[in-house]
Length: 471
Image (cartoon, rainbow, N blue to C red; front, side, top):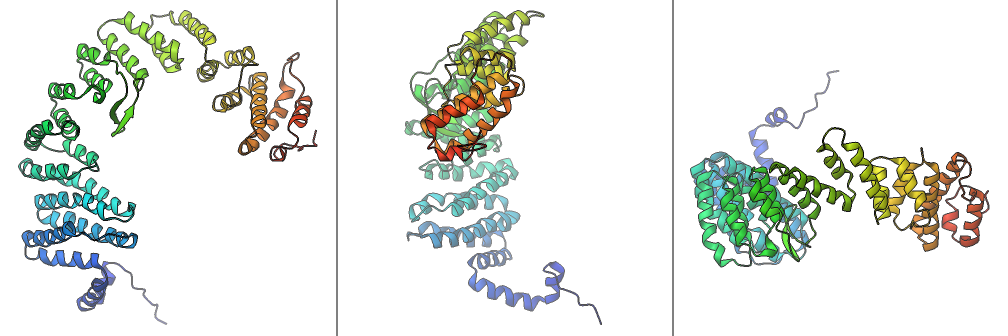
């Protein structure tokens, strides 16, 4: 019996169907699939050249832009499919034939986001994903276009910016500043400079001007623009870091010492964010120390690092401070640092330092020295410390685990009962390893006290080995 050959859905298999059969299938599918129909129409228009293809796309963009009907959830899902196909037609079909024309149309397509959002009954993540993907592809498309063609796109880019009332395209526009060649950058800078005086409360134009200036390596123009901002919009730390990396240390020192006052709105992870005056204070002091080092003011830099360590007990700062010392001086300074940690008013910060450094012996001393001061509500500090101490400093670990268990039960934190049960099991494991004369009550006495005070907290006892009546 002859072996049957299974046809595959690939180029060879479809070719075997024949052109007439494929045409019939495509026509049937296109009748019900708007996205497929639009792609076929665009491809057909391409036979008449890119101008005909662009005309067809323009007509579709006009229709979308002029529509005013409300868009419900079901329609938004359908539109996401249609718009994805439209973007693909612009980027792939037209893009291969005439990249500058495709860039112009895709910028117009991206600008449809604002009028569409006003028509939506409910937000549509699927629809917005189409626009986000289009933005990513557009950056790459514009990057590939030659300098003169890029410059001709600038009016279309600025038109998109002016249409962006709520900053939805801020990230995209900033990305564009990094891919434009000098002719386009210069043209856009000229347009933005004209509108900055008319946008006193909208910093989009000014921010983009700064990004373009940095792209061209014009730091002085960037600084002039930063000085034009009101005090509550200046990011003096970011400017100081920029100047530091550019080896302009005197200027960097001036900016880093401009301490902010009051609330500010500055970019944080690319988004405008309201921050208080202490935001970035740690980074600011460390940067100032680095700048002082570069200015050969080593003693001032070290004094600043020591002061920062003494306040924050940051192990990284101490390591940096010690690395800048002369040979053999670090041992005395390390002892001095440990004294500072022991005396610090924040006992939790001090414990975390010794755990992180690590000096588990000193961490254990810290635990026992403040044995009656720990509060279980600081479980984010105490639980990791107890775990870190359990192998080599079991007595200190037991003290912390007991604090945690007692606090969970005293406050009746039901969701934490399983954690408390695990802590009790750990206590049972650790008790035989305590040194003689440790001064703590036995594990049985500890459990008996818990039963007297918290016998009705069955959620806890069900997670304890042996339960409420166990030994």
